[in-house]
Image 1 (tube, rainbow, N blue to C red):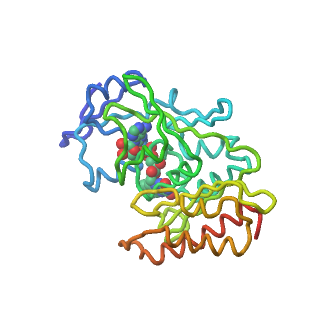
Image 2: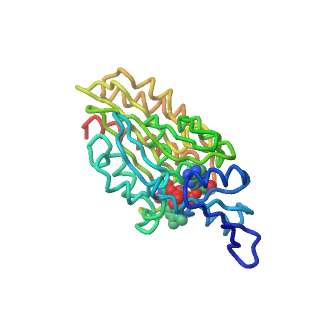
Image 3: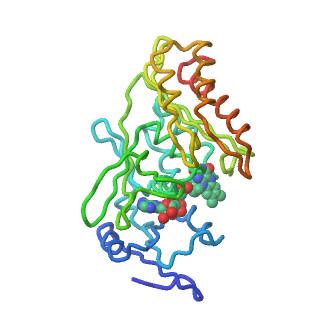
Length: 294
Ligand SMILES: Cc1cc2nc3c(=O)[nH]c(=O)nc-3n(C[C@H](O)[C@H](O)[C@H](O)COP(=O)(O)OP(=O)(O)OC[C@H]3O[C@@H](n4cnc5c(N)ncnc54)[C@H](O)[C@@H]3O)c2cc1C
């Protein structure tokens, strides 16, 4: 099963053929870097950012980890579901999940969408990953599997920092799940980069909410950066908006509160001021979209 990947490399690729075997192999090799379809990992290996000695390749476990199903009120997505696969799923076509359509339409390129997995997206744990804010706004959970069993954790708790996960070394993320918020809810997602396709986002923002008869009954907001360097919920802005009428006064108030909640820093891609202005503009647009207001 162990075979050298490159002649002059010391890298070993472990390729078990079942989830059970993968969990056993990972338990015996907790230092192995897990690899799904490598669209994030491989560029980082090539540019020297990470130098794993061992790789646990789980890309072949599609029989076990490539499902999308509804279990009661809960939508369950296997870790190896690709973005293209998700695009064809019936739940994505429901109006309340239109954020998925917004997100997928701007994700990489067709070639990238065909390989990028949702599990890999969450585990990449950076502000460049587009699914993380949406899963945060959906209150999604991850299922972590190991030889010791399974445990569930909110995506929020799972993200421990930039490229850091609350994952035990012998655990594989096997599923992401969230409750269907139900009729009356809406969702929207937007990202902005330097061009329309194949971009690393400067900002992205996801909103899930219920706005009925002009009143904001529930709202959850997440962006690729709020206070730190990884996607987070904007909970102060959510609290400000909940229970209020959707009108100009509320929107102006929310923009002010959101602006105060955002603690951003300049980096090589954009200034904090520019990112903040983009996020505030997008927030207003997405709330109006969910509320059916132009
Ligand atoms: C040209 C290009 C364009 C891109 N465009 C976008 C874009 O528009 N939006 C966006 O969000 N991303 C984009 N990406 C990034 C990347 O495609 C996504 O993050 C993708 O979802 C990663 O999935 P993967 O299966 O390739 O993960 P991999 O690269 O295999 O893994 C990513 C990370 O997660 C870990 N990992 C993977 N699966 C598991 C698991 N099941 N359990 C535990 N750890 C795991 C790996 O160890 C690694 O650290 C782009 C990448 C490229 C190269």
